Amino acid sequence: MIFHSNDVSETERIGAELAKDLKPGSFAALYGDLGAGKTAFVRGAVSVLCKDAPVCSPTYSIVNRYDGEIPVYHFDLYRINDDDDLYSTGYYDIIEENAIFFCEWCEKCPQAIPDGAIKIFISREGDGRRIEIADTFT
Image (cartoon, rainbow, N blue to C red):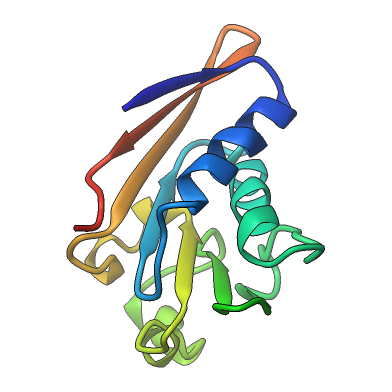
């Protein structure tokens, strides 16, 4: 599926729509350049899954947890250099939890993305964004 967003609020709305179909174990792998809108997309999704959770980029913390009926983990792999770095964050233990997962910068550690992950590619398109959602959970 391909969507076009003209501003941050539309990107958030597209994320919110996707969130309605997620269930425990869902893993959304986000790809895109710096400033493409990955965190805005996650913010929209989390607004549905964990009402009133303050979503911010986990660039420095690596992972944020948002509490709702189903916990949501939001990873950012921008500062991860290799699988050893990722392992030291507890990533592999966390993704075994009964939760929903969003992971930014998946191009940094493609081997760590679970089979069946929803892949979301966000790119600039003029003044807006192109959001392609490929693969979905069954």
